[in-house]
Image 1: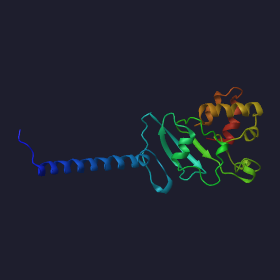
Image 2 (image 1 turned 135 degrees about the horizontal axis):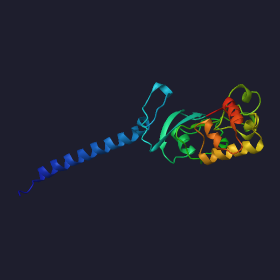
Image 3 (image 1 turned 180 degrees about the horizontal axis):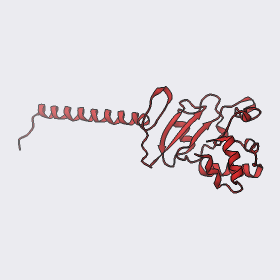
Length: 194
């Protein structure tokens, strides 16, 4: 086998370094585009497809966050991961009103409420609760008690079930809460939204 000259070694070394740099740049570009490729976001008119491979959960993050939208996260992710993926809590966010440690469920909507007067979530008291549906993801016990057929005990069971499940993707999941029958489910469907 012939020996390589210094100039040949230098050329081979330069080629090797160039390939390493190109590879590193490609890896870095792939890593920085992962959030855009892995989420659907109506914000700014950009739309991305979501792969239903089953190894991820798709959640809708809205409310007081920097970048509301629909995001895909690994199975087992927590609400705090979804808020972080949406750019973090926005100004006036009332993070204490949601369970940041709850596991995410596929199809779940994570609503980060805004802090109103006195630290109460906006829309949590007064006529605002009567005007439209209440988010099951952020509803307080007091809001739930305003619904026909829901008393303090059932309201607390709903909150505990929601926390155990890491949120709710559908109102129909409340069928699993003891003490909720068909008539109460109709009241819940009329007053709650996912």
